Length: 295
Image (cartoon, rainbow, N blue to C red; front, top):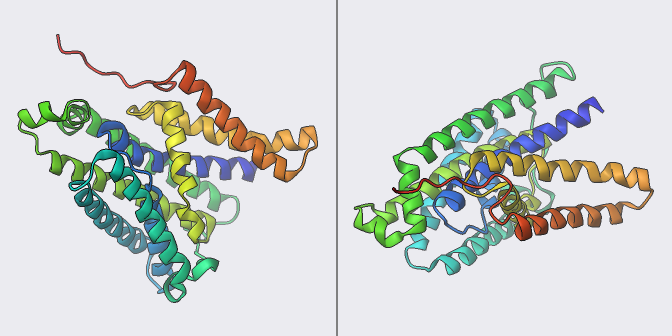
């Protein structure tokens, strides 16, 4: 039970970091991204490939961040030519293209079998101190990114993103370079999410094409919608609720004595009901964004 709790908290922390990344561009900048998981996938694959080549974990994470930032710059540039809704669809297509490449380029990515084993970061420590040390690292990075994104949101950059999100023409009149703002938002978001992808690869000791499924992106969107998009604390609350629901359903399976297939369906159903309830009675999320009013 102790190891299960540690593993659950670790996964929740990693998803919290990914959700903070998505919140940067979707919550503050209002940019629809339905392929956000691609940044995490790049972080995970860069770590796996680097470790296989004999590189260090830090180098693998750095390569993943650079690759994700480059992809983010490309996606932001693509957004200059497309409307917001078409841009969202394009991001979904890009993530699917990356998943197809990861599935078919077996010489680099291991194909459908993925890459394993990826060493844990604290293998030299005895159990359970290795998993506890990894959990402490995840919590420390989550806390650092929470502080960083809060600082960005409350600073000039965050205010500019909000003005761009609410009134793009007004933001342009204020002298903001909208293209630069969008690019910086997407690239910062990509860097944060790539770090989470690298951590996930180390934790699971595996990287595969399933990491790039679109359902993973929509899981992150669910976290934002339930917790409160555009609010750092809402993102953390949404992460706790969604991961808590994912964790508690298997216990219900054992208590009510139904099959594993039904448990998977029940898990999705519970998340769907929570999301539906929030949309109906709390459309801004459980911890909504607080906007300052101009007197």
